[in-house]
Figure 1 (cartoon, rainbow, N blue to C red):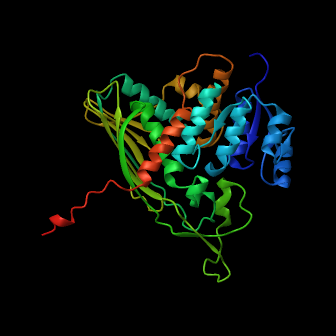
Figure 2: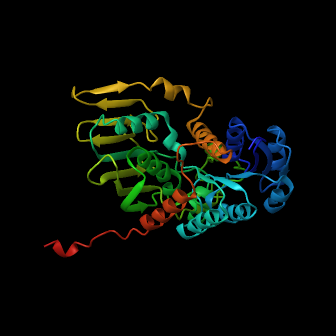
Length: 380
């Protein structure tokens, strides 16, 4: 494919603008952008020099004739837009979650398979440089057989962030959709992609959030926290989704003789005391990566029985896309792979709607909270 790949973006906020820049970085041409509000989409199109701006997705597909579409809206708004794009013959890049439930996500994966279009699912923090480094170290046998992985994070998010899609299960909200998907992607990248078993619990530690008008960009939502939360005129929305979770999983690894045990612990509203981290424990050592999404640095515990900070190899450094922000950089990694694949170039495996559908089905299972064993009869 010699001509530039034509891209249509759905979503005008932080994600939509980030996707547009990532596709341009990969050498594609962004031909249009679609949003809900005409004045907003026209302003974003003008600011970003995108030739087409509209509010009708189906009409935009006809007018722009894109090769690939990029979905950058909340999960609850994905299904119809993705289905229309696939039926139109477009390849699809979608932010997570793929849809609001596992059944609808599987439907989109099946349709994409049937129509033979390429898809990419943006649980993309597996492209953090220290994750790539850890994967290489584990494959080289530096820690022996992987035995166990521990993912600990306490975000301590502001409880008073304005009410929006992130508070609603039906709109793709919740910490499983918007945190766990990244953690699971990181761990499977390092250990192995096959998930054998899973269980967990979730909690809504929030309850409610203030309703505030004018929030259009997810990244800036903290700027809209009301100054007076006791104002009797303030209206509140009810949260119906999890803010904390604990998940246990077992993964198959070609590097291990037994399934690898994984703990995912996330306190979305709770303060941290020590640093968030991801640790991979093996039969001969361990790898510690600082940060909830493995932002680094990385440390190795090996034969000398001491933790040693280990810098990134130069080839990994040289391959890091030049952009500020982990989220934006990881979009660029994944979109670069998708664009190469569409062009017919050889690429390493990347996450598609197969994983997007699988992750959503796993989240449905975890949210059932039905893994408890009643032991009250043992209390003598």
